Length: 188
Image (cartoon, rainbow, N blue to C red; front, top):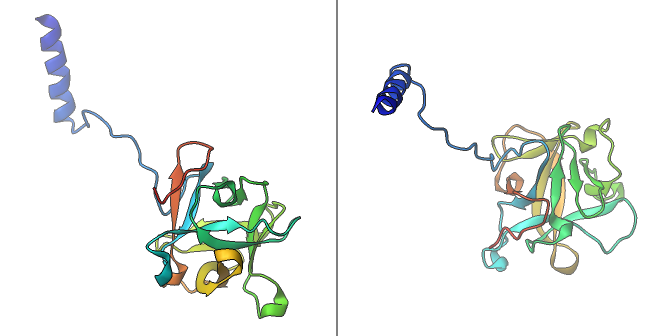
C-alpha cells in the first residue's frame, strides 16, 4: 500500500510540474535526414506514364569509374539507389562509396549536372542540405531538379538549377529513411 501511495505521489508531482509521463520515440524527419542516415531520395514529381511509382536517385552503373551520371529510375530497392548522408552533408552511394556532386551546367558540352565522384568534404558541389520546402541544394548553389525527360534505359534525367529559395514540384524530393544499412524498396 505504501508503494502505491509513493507512486501516486510521484505521478501527482510530475503532473503538477507539467512533466510528460511518457515520451514518444523521436521520428526521423522525412525531409531532412539526420547525419549518418541511410535511405533513398525520391522525386515527388511522378511522370504520367509511371503508374504512380516513385522515382529514386540512381547511380547509373552502365559507365565504369568515377563521374557516373546520377539519374532517376523507378525505385526498386537496389544498391544503386541506396544512399548515406554524413555529418558534413555529403551524400554517399552505398554501392561504391562515391559522393553526389552537382553543378548548374551551361549546356550539354558542360557535361552532366549530377554525377557520383570521389568524396571531398571541402568541395562545395558535394555538401548538400535538405530544405524545409523539400529542395535538395548544395553549398555551390545548385539544387536537384527532375526534368521529366527520358534518359537511358527507363531512367529520367536529373539535373540541377540555381537556388532561388522556392521549389516547384520538379525540385521537390523526399528522403525515405531506412532503419538499417540494407536497401529497402520505398514503393512497398
